[in-house]
Image 1 (tube, helix red, strand yellow):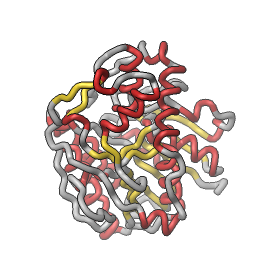
Image 2 (tube, rainbow, N blue to C red; image 1 turned 120 degrees about the vertical axis):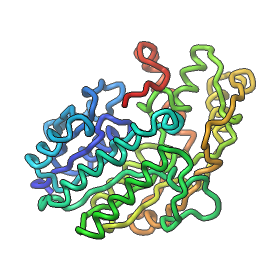
Image 3 (cartoon, helix red, strand yellow; image 1 turned 30 degrees about the horizontal axis):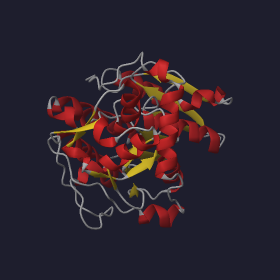
Length: 332
C-alpha cells in the first residue's frame, strides 16, 4: 500500500489520535490528519511519541468554516481511504443548541460526501456513527435494528448515516459504518466519567452520578475500537454497518466504584446522586458478532486493565491536567 494514502478527519479527537497511532504502526499508508483545532500536545496525542512521523502530516481545518479548503486539500492529496471521526458528540448539550450538532454532523457532512461522490481516487470511506442512534437498547441489538434516537445528538448521527446511504445507493459511494459503544482510555476528554473520577478523587471533589449511575454502558478500550475500525476500513464490505462492543455492559456506578476502591476511597462518600440527563437511554448493549466473524475481531483489553491505565495516566500527568479545563466547553 506504499502508493496509497489515508485521510483522517477528526485526527485531534480522542478516537482519531489513537487510530492515527495504530495506522502508523500497522500500515505503510501515508496519513493526512485534519481537525479544527491546533495540533495538541503529547498529553492527548499518542502518535507523537512515534519515530515514524515522516509519513504523517497535519492540517488545521474546520469542516464547517473551512470546507472549501478541506475539499481542495482532499483533491490535492487524492487519498485512497478516508475515515471520518469529526462530529459534535456530547449528548446533554445537544438539547441547548441542536442546530450546532446538525450543522457539523449532517449539513457539513453533506457537502463533503457530495464532493467525494465524484472522487475517482477514493476506494473506501469509513464513517464513525454511534449506537446512540438506536435509542435505549433491549434484546439483541444487531446492525439490522432500526434507529430510534432519543436526543438531538443521536438524531443528527442517524440522519448522517441515512444521508451517506442515499449516496451509496444512488452513486455507489464506497462507504462502510462503525458503531462502537462507550469508548474509554488514557488521553480521553477530562470531563468523561472515567478520567473525571480519577481527577476528582485526587482533588477531593464529590463525583456526581446522574440517575445514581444506574445507566448501563458497554465500555470498550480505545485501542480495541481502533483495531476494529482499521479492519473495517481495509477489509469491510461496502455498505455494511459494523458494531464494536464488549461481551457485556456495566453500570456507571460500578465503574466509579472500581476506581474509588483502587484509589482507597469510599464510594458512598466520594459520590452523590443527581438528576438523570434528559433523553438518557437505559442501556447500550449491542451485538458485535458480525465484526467478530468477518474480521476475527474481539476486545483484548479487560475493563480493569483499561481503567488502571486511565488512572495511571491521570496520576502521571496530574500537574499538566490541572492547567486545563475539567468541564465540557461547547464550541459550535
